[in-house]
Amino acid sequence: MSKKDFEVNLYRDKYFKTVEMHSHDFYEVYCFIGGAVDYIVEDGLYRLQAGDVLLIPPNYLHQPNVKDGSKSYDRIVLWINPDYVKRLSSPSTDLATCFQKAKEKGAYLVRNSALSDKLVTELIAVIENENSNSFGADLTAENHVITVLTLLGAHYLKNRQAKQAEQSEIISRAIEYISEHLTEPIILDDISNALYTNKYYFAHLFKEETGVSPHSYILKKRLLMSKELIEQGLSITDVYVRCGFSDYTHFFRAFKKEFDLTPKQYFHLIKAI
Image (tube, rainbow, N blue to C red; front, side, top):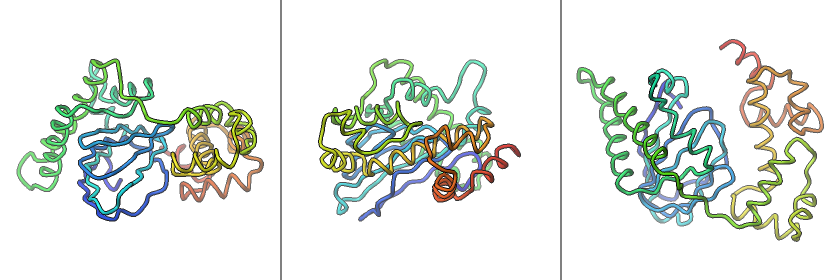
């Protein structure tokens, strides 16, 4: 995100280049307009339909998987800083409610055409005001952002039944196993034995449904966990041991590659905030 508080972009891509599974430290509201796309958020796979909206909390792994590159992949994306959301909220209205409820329910997809139309209209208005020099355009843009979060929060509070991810039972159980044993050594045989399935079949199925290998998924989950523990003030030594890394060198290299900062640099960055 290039701006400090929020950013809205409309993207239209043909022959979209694959993006690997990733995460970021801000909220994302993703409005799918058109194309042929499956979308992974954490442990869930969503087969998107035009008008679908995804909510992606900070530090949650996610990845689009374009199924047909000849179709234009169109979407509007809002990125918003969590601290900014706090500042916009009031004592009686927490604008992060939609993300909190999405996490509680484990359901990040909103499939409601009427709501989607309103959200797209609001986000386009944000873009228009961001590109305007007219008096009050910045405040008008901010008001539209508030409306987006208010609409989504009200939707999650009103609708107790959320759209669940579509995923095979094997992958769901595998991800559950990984989450439960993340701090321990995990090899492919451990997972396949726990699932009573062939490890080569499992590895192929996991890559097909999630877009990453089991090893890559485990590594990314551990790195996100390490980042959260560093933010809590734990020492680097405690962090890499708690997150299941066999040695510091492996942890150091993986962390640097994923976040473009060393663990110690990130530790000092957090302390300085």
